Image (cartoon, rainbow, N blue to C red; front, side):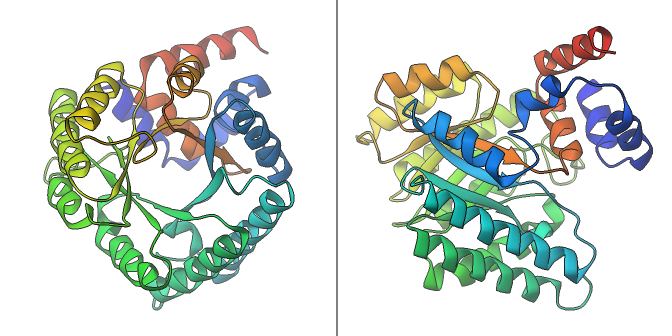
Length: 309
């Protein structure tokens, strides 16, 4: 119930204003967000990579309503990729991009604009020696995002997809994408979706996650297991062994600031672990979804609110 309230609050301008103007310690936001500037993301990435982790960097921003804003997000990614390349990090760092941030929801040619911007980002990523993953958002944009993915993969076959196990459709989408060369990040999902399209019970979402993971591990693509759930991590390891997958033929993904000790433990065990590193000034919606996902995150946030005035 509290999680759903937080997801609703992530869309509330009134709550957003209250949170952004509250005397919250920067340390609270810094637990989940690398910083406001691209250099902050580069520094965070360097630290993680030096700890034998890989990264995927996300320039925070969504719900773009103007073409100029979409152009600015594209340019931010081009700048980010150049900085990662100059720092010698692109062998271990890729980028994640939300299609809503690069124009998908703009009236008229929004999807075309998003595709053009994503293509420019993929071109820059290829030149820098790395890849791009298309983030997934609300269910209303799933078909559009998968359509953009299909177009991009014609020229950039390593472009990654994200699928969300709380959607009823996802097991079928996994079957479609579990093919050679395809990179798929499987997560549970972090948006407030209606019962008509998504499982509402946490146990049902977990069961769907395992079914989807079985499809991906049994396929010929590259599964990216995005979870902090110890039980699902254990199941992923069992499925990888059952399907005779060698280390490096799949990876685990976790969020910046969430279970860092587990990230390092898996890396020390020889697993590939990639950390999702967000940065940028539009951190509010991202933060609220992180709080909604885990009660421990909410407790951490509330304690900071009470102790930092």
